[in-house]
Length: 428
Image 1 (cartoon, rainbow, N blue to C red):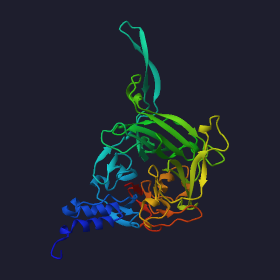
Image 2: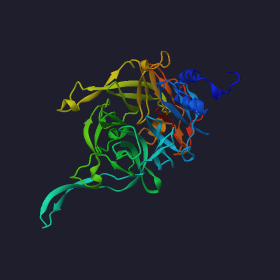
Image 3: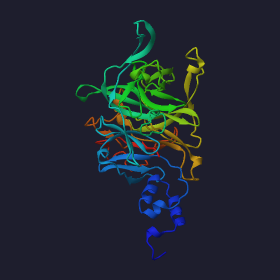
Image 4: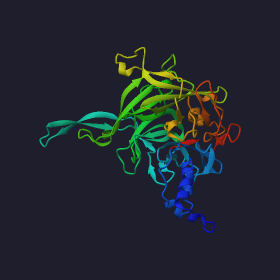
């Protein structure tokens, strides 16, 4: 043993080393050391938590929750090293804009595989019935058809999927919150919701509810066969994406999103008003939760965290009880660790990890730039350039009255802004 090299370690020793590495990236780096370590039989992979991609000046690095915020280098393709990240999905898939405002792709950080995403949005579709004639010129039947609106360039801000992605998987549907780019690349600050089949280069605009600020989308999640959209007024819009071929529909109209319900769940006095705080949808234990991050009034930094569960409303707002839901305060995390970010919030059970490995709490990231160019701009520090991204308000917090702890390498007062991307979670 003393005369052998590291590549000659017995398999049982390699297994013990692997079992003591809580961070999934550490295990990847370990396997890359040599062939014998890569091929050694190891036990089932330990449960993992997300890592935080930090946009450092020298290039993106990742900070591991299980590793106490330890930094790792991130080996990315050259065209992605200065890209803008705007979300992630399980399996280390990252939503990336290679050219900041366009060039959208779904990039697997581990394998390098990529799936192109739309840079063009079709606009609202107008549906109509079209007559089908027989050979004698008589009307035989009618078919539904659709005319798309203007094709407009878009900038995606947050996205999620209906299931794990794969190349050429047309059954996988993506949903995104985005801005439309106007003349000379100017950003229309009203945010839209769009859907598309994975691999398609055209996104379809979903039905809008209202142009009032309180109904503008701020988060999106997939739950129980539907896409849920949380608005700035903390209301819910739910969409069912019709992704099945229909012989009575032709062309782009074979795929569209149907607004199936609208819940006035906001806690504000006026349903059309926006609420000056961040909200995130999280699925946990078969239930839809909302994590609320309150802001400091001077710079928009996190001040505290609250948790709410979606429950039947005590006072019915509609004739249909199923359409009357409300956000009910939850006073305890009950052994859960939550990770929140636009489009990629997740819940984890502390009991599923080795004793003492993790503690309940809510991990948050700096998404102030996500809200800065909205109706909440007065809450945030001014930026010298519209292409700068706030990146220091990252940390963890228990529920109110607890105060946040900045537990990642970049902390307030250090490098305040990134020139290419905001922080984003990388889901294992």
